Image 1 (spheres, each protein chain N blue to C red):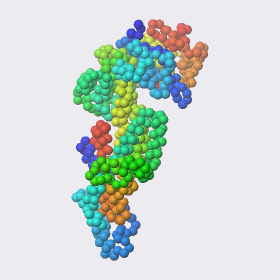
Image 2: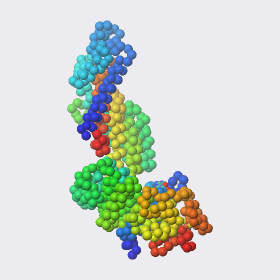
Image 3: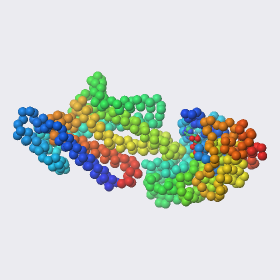
Image 4: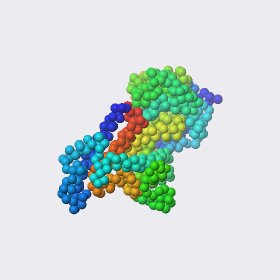
Length: 326
Length: 314
Ligand SMILES: Nc1ncnc2c1ncn2[C@@H]1O[C@H](COP(=O)(O)OP(=O)(O)O)[C@@H](O)[C@H]1O
Ligand code: SF4
Ligand SMILES: [Mg+2]
């Protein structure tokens, strides 16, 4: 069964937000698989729907979100969309956990680190002392010195890099099968970023979990991920393994991202290169290809209907008529 | 923490000193000769001079001020110009009534206002949220003496559930508690609205913060998120507000004491003002300011206890 190889299998996920201007179609027909023990990277400019995608996985969307009925989110063989409240609580932080972008605001300022970590274990039948012990061990593992004593400290007593380490420790508390990292190093400087990435690589060996890694940083994606998904304006425009994607990019958007980056994938940079033109209005979508207003390779079919997803070869596919017509 | 407490204590003392300075200035600025008004038109100049000397009003302004402060330190607030009883003693008799009334008023407002605010924030835009919004604004708009009068009419006179006036039998705690219910409600009800709106606003703000999103993503039970993770932060501005708000609760207590004919500092001071019994006015205002300063001090300490960042800042 294919689901046993994929920890996560998202099929035809569409999400829109009710807004004053009408329905904002933030995600459209997303297909996505995260294979066992692999790291899948998601790239795309800000506003393309990365966070919406991630939040859908844990059913943590804003109240004005509407998920299309056809959407399926199969996690370890179960459809997350069908889960009840209690199942969801058993999923969040236990089987899927998340590391957020900004470590400075991700932790509760008035609750001690130890208490916040112990709370994640609330479903475990452990004594308070055992939970603390577990928390201290996790802190030690992510490189926080003097971890037992520091359990009683509060977030403001730690630096940004340390706080992100704490968040990572929290994410791994329950030994989840899927770890989602939403731009985990964007808020950190380059040195800290390198340290955190190094730590994540190290922990990956120890914890054997699959990972969904959202980033603006092409260099990091190339360094860390096995597979890459490129998103544009609420669609997956290209996906494939990291080698194919960086060396044989098919979609004009991916190609532009890579071309704009002079040192290509080697240079570490904070943001995606800017591409001229603006993102389409998600309330009023263009009729044809979503990228056509900005696409230099646009030709006749592009304005008529949106392209489907076409196989480039193997697991590599792109949503562009050029691939079909090649 | 010790240093923090000392700093706050210093501030509290400063508040009291400034308040007394203002009060003394007010006494001096009030038109008309206090002795003349107190003793009536037929008093002789000698009687007036004697009266002024008794109240210390014959001395230069700053001498009076520092003498008063000096006496305060030794616990001497002078004597009632009419009955010649020590003011300290009179205040000691009245103070517990006012403190109890203020605390019960505070209790009422917190007990209704905070859960109401939490509820409205959690069920934002629900029917009950809108309903509480109306109630809250209503509570804010209605002066406490109106609430007092109607509560008195309805619950004491019509329904007879609670006693109407007085403070209850001395020594009978149950009876005294029953006598506190209605005046306490009158004092606290105006604050229910403030608190509910205030708590709602800060809850909504906190609920939108990243760490709450994170707590949700970690499957922490919703109740725990609302009442521990969010409320512990959202309550901080409310604690500060209440610290200051006790001032207005005390002034509400003055009305309640008059309407419900309860003993207390408020009633004592109002009576004293009418007879220009300045030592009592001074003493009464002094202890109310002290109460006020003390409550801001306590609210600061509670905030520090709740918030480690405040604790560390001092
Ligand atoms: N609660 C919401 N209501 C309305 N629009 C939203 C909401 N959340 C996100 N959006 C919109 O959905 C799109 C995708 O946003 P997001 O997923 O945050 O993008 P990313 O994480 O890639 O920057 C954006 O156009 C954003 O404005
Ligand atoms: S389908 Fe056409 S417009 Fe869209 S990306 Fe391909 S070439 Fe460009
Ligand atoms: Mg985002």
